[in-house]
Amino acid sequence: MAIAILNKQNKLNYDDLISKYTPELDFYKKVTIRQLINHTSGMPAYEDFLDSVWDKSKIATNKDLVTLFKKYKPILHFEPGSQYEYSNTGYALLAIIIEKVSKNTYPDFLKTYIFNPLKMQHSLVYTRRYKPFKINNYAFGYIYDSAREKQLPDSLLSFNEVYYMDGIYGDGTVNSTVTDLLLWDRALYKDVLFDKEEMKVIFEPALLNNQEPSLYGFGWDIENNTELGKIVSHSGSWPGYRTYIERELDRDKTIIILQILIERICQLILLEEFYIINQSTQMK
Image (cartoon, rainbow, N blue to C red; front, side, top):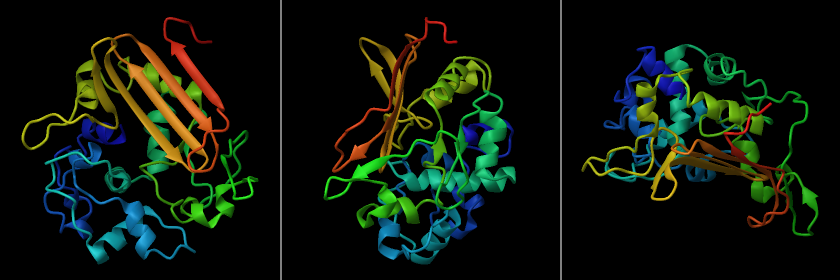
């Protein structure tokens, strides 16, 4: 959505090459902003890359990712635009592009153009280890150790990605609440950030080079369900947490799930918040 706002402001174009904004990566000659958004760029996942080359005693940032990609030049998994493959690298790079184009930090851009206008007062970009500060009522996600004792993932070496990847945003680190996400959901039906015509691109599947549609748009999985109509959704996960939002566009119904987990090999122990919201009910 931040990229869409900058496009509306005529500060970038979806089909710009990423090398226009990240010249350090000019060896990725054909990759566009649009392909980063809809996961058709072929960019390899940075998580696997960092695991092999990064000093895990330090916290990596988006700028570190660009530096490492420039140094090692990991090859694309496929010709840009030829297929869909989910890659968080794309969204980390999009955050860099947002900052360069807007001349603002990614957290401040979201606050200025999305959170504040929509009155999402409990939403922010938060990197708890990299730039810690106190948040009232912050929900910590826990896991079980080998002795079945509850631990923060920070304390276990097998989950050390929560530390050394904590400075990377764009693909994650947005913290919110169910009620704030409902405000977000409501705004997407109204002419708040975009009008209906401008919103169409957000919820349309990407076209591959062969003109076949993928099942992903601008940050949303897309499904045309024979019973429920058009559904857009997305899930997320991190040690101690699971998230999910589903919007049934033709029925005006939304499911928002924020889970705190105590997990061992993805075992769900505690469901912290689960809301199925019928939008015909007045929320107060």
